[in-house]
Length: 440
Image 1 (cartoon, helix red, strand yellow):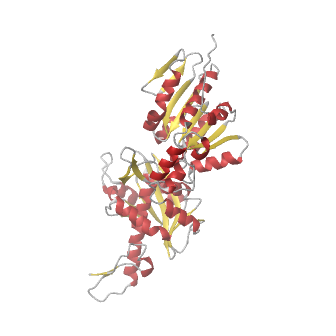
Image 2: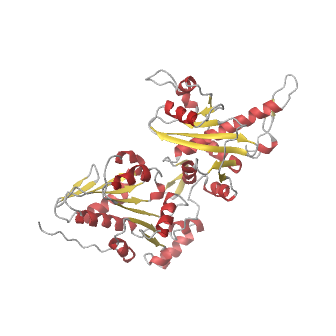
Image 3: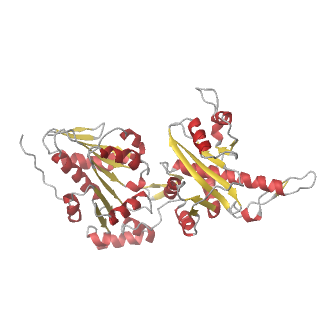
């Protein structure tokens, strides 16, 4: 067989990365640094050098469409002159004839599609935007039997999962770690950086160009509020108060995730004691999970569409849950923007269990509005991704908490005959947007 040789000419800051033999790598780089190109080169180099054993490599982006837009043209461009390389446009992969190695593009938005595959190496681009379960549950196991390697790359977006990987890489001699700030890399000239600084907020510039993990995520609804909660000690160990009922709020999925927030209404505010999320499971699974953890006796708040009857069974999910012994309460329809504002108002009185709500907290931290790259403006709707189900469940929990507050006032207030007073205790007025008592 004729030896196959190619010449890779990376940007200078990435030369050490391409020569590294570390199994694990983390690259934190500013925008337009060329990190994706460098990683595509790494994948091609590995595929060419692989033995004749059907090696498999993957480039993984947060979304499948994003993988195609960002990396597919690079992969085709850098392999088109290599003899015997075949390209599959529909499956987004290239195969090397001399050893059968293959590089394929995936999206973490459907990470279940990768279950059962094996990988000799992979690149996780913008790892911070991925569902945090994709790596430990699917991608990492795919690397196990063949001792595969992984590269995590991205630009900071707050202290998310990518930040945790960066910290691990910085602290371990087993990792290759690279941080490229625009002010130090020399890849973007000073004039362009000065112009970018003038057109961006200080937080945006610090995040996008100076690789700051401390800058707030652009467009995040709850990022600053969560940072305040952490600073004030409201993200901590929240034990179940045996004197208070335990309530739940459900975001019910059919083809996607179902999320449940478990909470109590205490004198100090809303106690979020657990966060449960799963995919593709029947309602009985979640009921069993709640009861195994001792979560029953309070109300189960579900969105208004839970009353819609299934064409298969003729029963609604509301009826199904009630038939399983749950105390279901149907929430009235609510505008999403109003619900987000309601959560924001209530946030200063929210307490989160740091361990049991860990995944939920990360989702809330990254829940953000859509950004229109062409118009350079934020859209009026939230971005729909893996964070949406948790955010919706918290909106329903906030609605349920207000419902409980009204109940408490109705029990406490002693109206005159023929009168009913509806409102909230004084200490909760601010949290409920200044709601006033109404005399009916």
